[in-house]
Length: 550
Image (tube, rainbow, N blue to C red):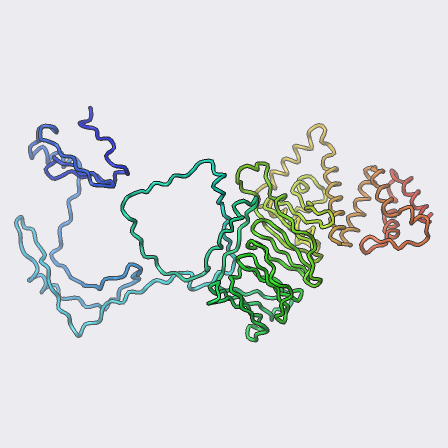
C-alpha cells in the first residue's frame, strides 16, 4: 500500500482534529487554522453501492445515536457567572405539566421522527423565585495557617553570564484573551522584590513570605505578645506594631511605612522586627527605640534572639550578632559561604539546606545543615568550627545514637539533630554495615579507637569555647582515662603541663582558673582518676610530687 498524497508544512502547530465531509470528497483538518483538502471522484476510486456500505458499517459496530424522548420538561435558569459553583438544587421547584407541553410542542416528521418545537413559558406569580446557587467557600477562609512559609531564592543571573541567549517567539499573531481571575482570600501580601545584588551573590537563601498579620509571644512572660499588622508598605497605610498584655491592654504602638516579615525578642528586655528591604527596628519593653533603624541592605531569612543577644542572617548569607544591652556588635559580619560552598564555583548549584540557625545564651551563632553537621562561629578564631559530624556517629564509641532526649548541653542538642538527619536519610543501617566491613580490613584495626578519641577531643574543645563547665570536666576525665588505658603518655603529659605551668610550680598558691575550676584542683582529680593505670605511673608520680601530693 502506498499513500494517495502527502502534505508537508500544513500547520505550524499540532493538528487537533480531522473530519470527512458527508459526500466523502472533502477532508477538514483543524490546527492553528482550518485546512480543507478537496478530492475529485477519480482520485479516490469508484464509489461502493449502498449494500456494501451497510455491511462495512455493521462490522465496525458503531452504536446508534440516542433518540429524543417523547416526554420532555423545560426548565429555565438564570445565567450563572463563571466563578460560581452549584452545590445542590432545591427540590421544591415547580415544573410545568408535561401533558400540555406534549400536545403543543411535538410534531411528526418523515420516518416517524418527532420534532420538539420551542415553547414560551409565561411567568407565574405563585411560583417561587429563581434558583439561588450556593458558592463553595475556599478552604483557606475557615482556618489560618500558622507555619511560616518561605519564598524561594532568586535564580536570576546577570545577562553577561548567560551562555545562550533565549529567543522568545510569539506563539500566534492574535492577542491573548485575558481571563478574569477569581477573587481569593489574602493570606500573603506579595513576594519580596528582588535585590539587584542578589544576582551577583554566591549564596541565596529563601526569605519568609509577607504575612498580613502575625503575633509573637514572649518566651518568659506568656501575657506579653507583639502583634504585627502589615499595611500597604507606604505612607497611606503604614504597618502597625503593638505590644499587648493579655491581648487586650496596649503597652506601646508604633507605625512604620514598610512591610514587616520577621520578629523576635521578648526575652532580654527588647523586641526586634525586620522589614522586607532589610531594615531592623529594635524596641524596649516600654516602646523606646534602643537603636536607630539598622540598614542591612537585603531581606532577612533568620532573626533569632537569646537573652541579651540578637542574631540576624540575610538572604545573602551574611551573619550579624549584637549585644543589645551593651549596644555593640560581637564581631564583624561573617558569611555562611564556607559552610554552603561546593567545589564547583562556575555554575549555580543547590547546596545543603539550613535546618537551624540560632544563637546561644553566650552569644555564639549556631548553624545546622541537612547533612547532619553542626557548626558554631568562634569570634576569637574568626572562623566557623565543626561541633557535630556524622563521621563520629559512624565510628565513635562515645556517640549516643539512641532516641534520648538531649540534656541542656548545646553539644547534645546538635548531636541529637545529627542522629535525626541520619535516620531521615536512611543512612543508619548503611553506616552500621560499613563500620563492620571497615574494621575487618587490614590496617584499620584501630579505627574505632582513634575516631573515639577525636570525638572526645572535639567535645572538650567545644565545651571550653561555649563555657559549659560541667560538660568540660566530665569529658576531660573520660579522655584522660582513655589515653592512660591506651598508653598515650605524651598526650597525658601535655594536658598536665597546661594545668600546671612553671609559674604555678614556683608559687604555693595559684589564682589561675579554667572556666569555673581551679587548675590545680582539677589536676589533682585527674591524677587520682588515672591512678589505676600502670602505663602512666611515672607521669602521675612526677606531677603528684610537684603538687605536694606525695
